[in-house]
Image (cartoon, rainbow, N blue to C red; front, side, top):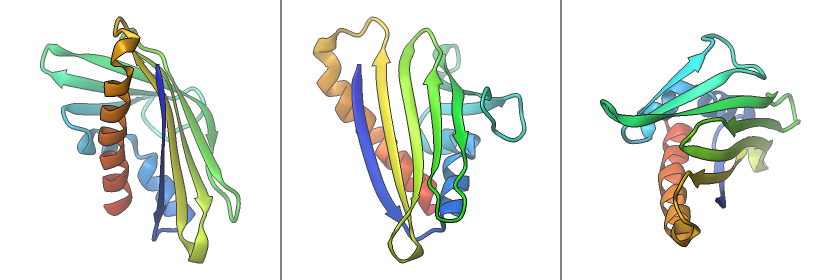
Length: 146
């Protein structure tokens, strides 16, 4: 398992940054070969399941993540969403935080622990580098586009 941290400051309000980060299907638009669905459809709450399907056709796997903390930001108070990975292939968790930043901007923190079942620890450095790269690009795109 590897843990990584991504931090960004965006010229967005806290509410707008939160909205962009937690529109789950958008994650499938910015992560290659991935589609995302939400169960049940509708507003996110604790217990919502976010399922990322990665791969091409039958050569893929589901990465189900349960929302275990759902605390949207309020005026001047940071927001936090925690997702626990519940699948057979990908293990770990992710936390998305949105804080008030300087000059009315939003400060975003994406913290994640990720492990791939049956992948030996020898490959942790490669997993860390590739996860930071893929999720860093995804975070940038999510914050840039409405």
